[in-house]
Image 1 (cartoon, rainbow, N blue to C red):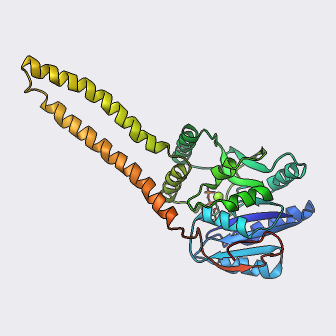
Image 2 (cartoon, rainbow, N blue to C red; image 1 turned 180 degrees about the horizontal axis):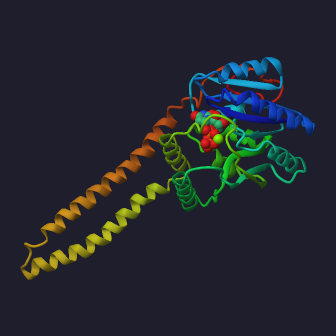
Image 3 (cartoon, rainbow, N blue to C red; image 1 turned 180 degrees about the vertical axis):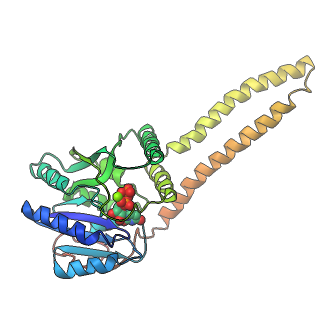
Length: 315
Ligand code: UDP
Ligand code: MG
């Protein structure tokens, strides 16, 4: 059986259509499936729509969060609630073409891969600024962790083994896209073009994207911490040169000069120290957050969840 996991936040106009399209396509290809909708604390009628669908169709599982916990949490809740032999994560707005699920499923079925990644060939309509930032983001990730994730998306199929491995992960602050590559397993790629949003507009604000980018990078690599060390090394070399120069001036008897240099150095070093403290502080706060062991999300209601298989520790 295939589980289709769909995190949704304020998607009242999309739920019914998406469920319809996915159901039709999977039925046509006679694939046994369940759809797992996760309502990520929507402020509109998303949950009511999900409930209606779950009432009508037993194959539609609905999970309701107590508030908005973010897409990452919604994906992990979906993985927890799913019990298929494999699971596909897709967006609620049909930007991830459902036909691609069939391609992914066939690759998985033939035993070629345990993970089938959806890779964007065309990123859809987006602003130049957004595109630029996303390029920079993936460049940073690649530099820092060696994972080439250009064009990566959350749209991917995971075998049960992989889902279980991800469910075992104890950490709270996650970056699903990278984590599902990090676990390894046989991976294949499927290319797709991002379609237009079916209805409504993107649920990410600029602020939430920046926060997502920073938290993704730091949850995946400690490379920014090395910037601190690098700055220290550079400043040390500078201090050797300037130190020698200052000593020479002192001995030569013209030590009064260099007031500007003092101010410049003071400004430079103090700003680098503060910048470094900021980076360290950020990681510290992440450690603090992890160590509190708070749950990644809080589930309020679940409908139609199957219990025989895929038993679940936290319920
Ligand atoms: N989403 C979510 N929680 C959030 C923000 C978004 O579950 O806090 C879901 C949203 O409902 C959609 C998917 O994540 O199914 C992708 O969001 P969106 O289409 O807004 O992002 P974009 O396609 O613009 O990257
Ligand atoms: Mg979208």
